[in-house]
Structures are given as structure tokens and as C-alpha cells.
Length: 169
Image (cartoon, rainbow, N blue to C red; front, side, top):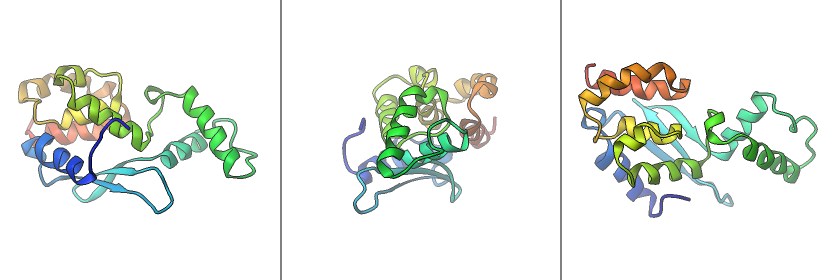
């Protein structure tokens, strides 16, 4: 996982240190880990409503909903995850709209450790999500980014629009 440290430290960074002033109080990040489960599930909420969830299960559901081959005749948990891992390798995050908790953490670390212009132009849509919400992005840059809104994945557009509206653009 790309981000090391406690959840409380990560949340403080996301909601207090990184987040644009105009979005404070509107965005909340959540993290859940169930007993006996090694994966953390992350979520982003806008105005109290879940907007995006990051977990292996959301990725697996995405594969099933898209009708990707392999899940039709699964018999048992081991076979389920074998099919999942095969599809996961064939469909990198640039080719899908659902992502794992590890991909969330890796993208956060990437955004945190590079200049904001690089993050805004990243091939990784999760990095772009963090970047559009980042306090380092000023109004002039945001105004220019309105021109690339239609190029963003559907799920990501809501974060762009949220930031544009919060900045009265």
C-alpha cells in the first residue's frame, strides 16, 4: 500500500491539510476494515452522501456488471478470487471505473509526493481526483481545467464540478 501511517493521520491530511479551503466541511473520507479482512475499504462522501467507494469488492462487482468472462460458473471463494485476479491484471485502473483501497492509497501517496501540475495531468484518475480537490490548485488553473471536464471519467466529473462550484467558477 502506497500510504503509510494511521487512518487518523491520513484523514487529517485529506480533510484538513490537503483539501481546498472552499471544500472544507463538505468532503469526508471514511475507512472501514472488517474483522478477518485484510483489506481497508475507503469512501469519499460529499455533503454527507457516499460519492465513491474504493475496495476489491467494488472492482469485482464492476467486472461482473460489465459481463467480463469468468464469473458465470464460479464454484467457491478460491475460484472467485482467481477469476478476479486474472481480470484485475487484464484491466488496469485506466481501463475501469472502480478501484481498490490499495489503489486509493497509492494514488494519495503519488499526489502527495509530486508537484500538483503532474498530478492534474496524471494517467491515474484517482490521482486527478486528489489533485482537483487539492488546495495547491488555484482559480486560474481551475478555470483552465474546465476545458478538460468532458475528458474525465463519469465518476470523476462530480469532483471537478464540485470544486468549480465551490470556487464560483
